[in-house]
Image 1 (cartoon, rainbow, N blue to C red):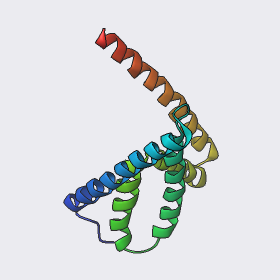
Image 2: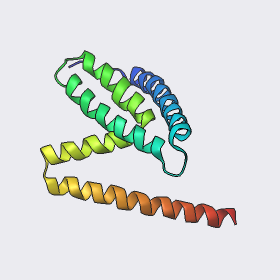
Image 3: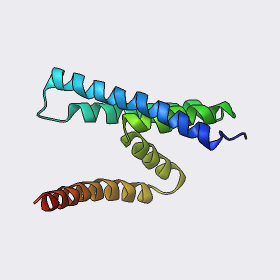
Image 4: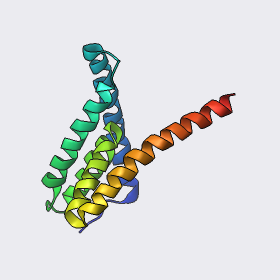
Length: 132
């Protein structure tokens, strides 16, 4: 298996990340115009679409040989990483359930969601305190 050199991986991630980030911005802006801002529809949309695309790309790239490494770095790490990190989380849960045990998948879900919400709260509180 030929690995993509690190400097080329960095460029592919940067390019893909720019595309994904712009896509996220455009989807979020469109969803606010369409559905309002009372609920984070844009974030939900990109997270769900990104999750679907992560699963689709994983299967599409699996077993495709050396060229899949380039596409994986560009599309999965770059584009989907810029579009949403939720897709990586969802794919990892699926892989844990498949390769490890469903218990590990469940623990990862709980730790990620509860831990994420608690840490957002902790960061929020820290920011408020530091702001004064």
